Image (cartoon, rainbow over all chains, first blue to last red; front, side, top):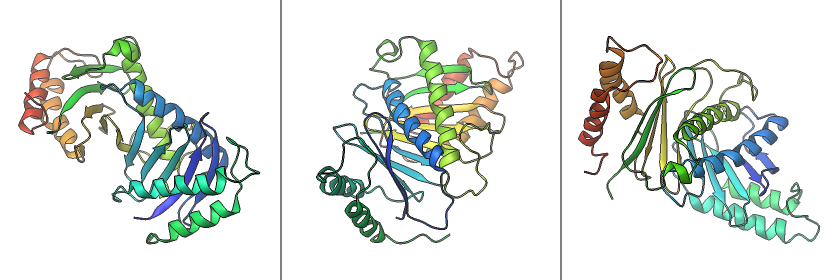
Length: 139
Length: 160
């Protein structure tokens, strides 16, 4: 499984972190990624409202022709989106691990203000190390 | 737990829901959006936005459209399904713009082939070939409803 990019959305739907892990693939423009994050937040809520069963918590996995998108929503409302290669096995542990890194290197950072844009070097470094553990892309 | 289908929507090119069928819906429409019409409009908004989202997010296309730009049918990456903790929604769009949405339980694999076969065998046969049917209009064809029921139970998707 190879990780293409990662996005972190705060509980109001604003994008606080975005990172691309592959140089060869086409990127999303920064303005578009801000809009996409807010759109995702609303879609998450609409999917719960349209659910035929009660107790729906929102979209966990989106499958399309060329990529898969995994989403982890924390109890506080923060969402972690991970764009991966299609038909990658679903490894909830990866997003869980990203959440752990977030709590360790972002939330415990005394200079970080909650719900603001993430600019923490240690978070970046450990995230890089985590992603490198998975096989790289081959186009 | 055997796979189970919950409900089924068919939309035309313009985004109007032309058919709705349900088998099992514990959370009624009134608890969700309030009315059947609102539910159908919201479903359209959901998959329309998801398709725009996927087209813009697509990592494998260098010439993808910017967010908000109109797309033609078949252009850009489209989503196939999404999974939530309660249900899985499957989407299929035909080249003529007819869209199928099927909500099932989570333990179902990829239903693209099933939806394509549903279109080919049941929809074309019972709806398109019906001489009184005007393409793109809402319809009430009992043979289509029973055809869908039969098709899905044959594949073990409906708990009787």
